[in-house]
Structure formats: C-alpha cells, structure tokens
Image 1 (cartoon, one colour):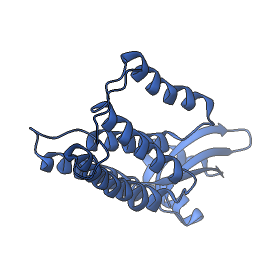
Image 2 (tube, one colour):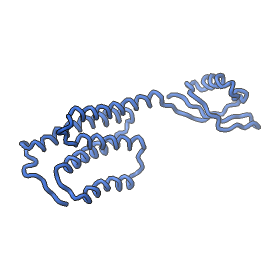
Image 3 (cartoon, one colour):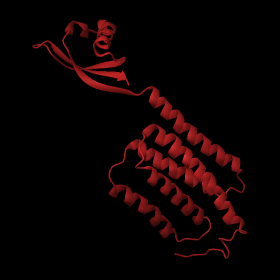
Image 4 (cartoon, helix red, strand yellow):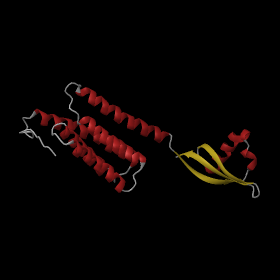
Length: 202
C-alpha cells in the first residue's frame, strides 16, 4: 500500500480535514434519521442498529480517505471484497434489512464525496430524497400490510365465481376480519369442505 498522507492532515487548520468532519456531521445526522427514526420505528429491531451505524461510519471514513490517501488499486478492491466475504459468513439477514444496510452505506458514500464544483445543497437534496423514499415506502407497506391464514369452509355453493361478493361477506362475518381477498387452496367434495386462504388487513 502506497501511503501519501499530507503533513498536518489532522490539523484543525487543514481545510480538507475540516471538510471531512463537516460532511461526517451531515452523514451522522441523516444516518440517525434513516436508522433510528425510520428503520427502527417500523421494524422495532434493535439488533441491527449497531451494524448499520458502524458500517455507515466506516464506509464514510474509508471513502473520504480514498480521496486523500493514494492506495494501490489491489488494496482498494481487497478492502471492499472483505464486506462481501463477511456477508456470506454471517447468518441470514432479511431482504428489507439488507436494503436498509445498503442504503446506509450509500448515504455514507454520497456524503463522503468532495463537493467543490457540485453544490453542497445537491448532496443534502440527495439525502432528503433517500430518507423520504424510505419513509413513504414504509407508510405504504404499513397501510397495505395484510396477514393470512387458512380456514375450513363448508358452504361449497358460495365458491362459484358469481357469488364471490357474498362469499367475502360470509367469511368476514365468521372471522370478524376485514377480508381483502381469498384463495381457494383445495376442495374436498366428499367431505363437503373447502380449504380457503384468507387475506385480511391487520
């Protein structure tokens, strides 16, 4: 690894270092909104908060230093390959959780960019768009979230397509649920029973 760290890089008089710390403050602010105010509010999973925050912080500083310290290309590729190795060696993480982890990494990478020709306002807009997208999607999922289970139904005459509305009303009265849709899994004509999967809003 070829290191070329400028003298006095960590000095408070160094504009490059101060710029990194300013962008770090912005990064932490938006990570807090994404992870604590959006992700945790809707998932109630505290076990991944440590991972998301620490990965976001590490990615930010790594990307910031890549723009200041000259590294061999093999070292840079090897560094990010470590993340892929760790991903496959850890226990399975849900798709939604992985999306948040990736979003946190993406926000940190965006905030680590040096913005000389590109206005800082543009970076803030990108962060706001990402946060709003996560919030709107969570609200949409919450409003349209449904649960399901299978019931045994014995009024086979209501299974005809033209009696679908009556069937929905009947099942709603029996279960006390707001039935969104149903799916007939199987019908036992000998026992005069049907196994129906019902979908209802929680």
